[in-house]
Image (cartoon, rainbow, N blue to C red; front, side, top):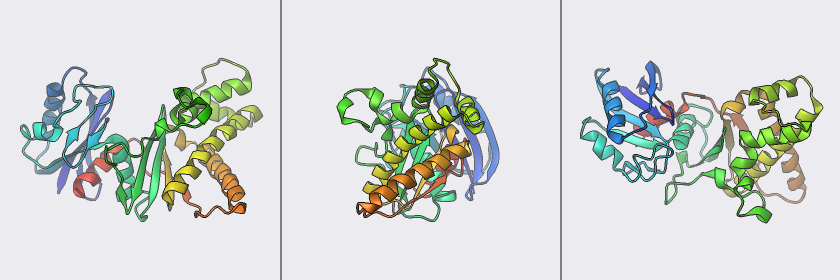
Length: 296
C-alpha cells in the first residue's frame, strides 16, 4: 500500500510517497501559500495527482487539531484554517481516507511507530528549538487531551515569582533564545551567537560557555523530573536541531542524574527514565503523519 503524507510548516510544505512500513518512495518540497485555504488545497491536490494507487493521505500541520473529527481549531501562523472542517473540505476534492494531526504530536507518533519509543508504553517527547514542543504518551498512544492541547509544554511556568511574565515560561527559559541569553551573560557580551557557535566554543573547552550550558541543561532536567513525576516515563526522547549536539544530551543526562540522586535520598518514589535521542529529524512529522493514519 502507498500513502501520500504532508508536513505543512510555516514556510514550506514537505511531502512524500511512503509505504506502510515507513519507507520513503519519493519526497519533495514546495512553498506554503500565505493567502487562503483554497490555495493550500490546490497544492495538496496537485501533489496527490502526481502519484498512482494511493490508499490514503496523512497530514501534519500546526495548530490545535482534533484528529478524530478532522477539525482544525487553530492554524498557527497561517491563520486561514482556524475553526475549519479541514478533512471534510479536502475530501470534496480528494475522495480518500484523510487524517490530520498536530505537528508535535506527529513527531511523537514517528517515535512511537518506528523510532526510539517503539517498544514502550509510557513516555514523553520534547523538541527543543525556538520554543519547546512536547507530547505525552500513555499506553503507547499520544495523549491529545480534552481540548487537544496536552503536552503544550512551552507555557509551563518556571518560577512562581513571575507567574504572569512569559519571559519565565519554559519556552523562554530553555528555547534557543534562553541558551543565547545565558551565554551572553557568561561572556558579558551582546554577540548574537548561533547554537552551532555556542557548542563549538563549549567543545573547544571554553569554561564560561560550558558553565552556561550546564546551567541551561540543569533547568531542562528540573522540568524533566517534574514530567517524570507526573507521568512515570519509561523513556523521554529529546529532539530538535540542538539535539544533534552530543554534548547537549550528555549534559541533560548528567544533570538529570544529579537531581534524581539528590531526590532519591529524600525518598523520591519514581523510577529513573531513560533519556534518549529522537530517531528522526526533519522527516519526523511526515513519518508520524503516516503512523497516525495507519493506526486511526
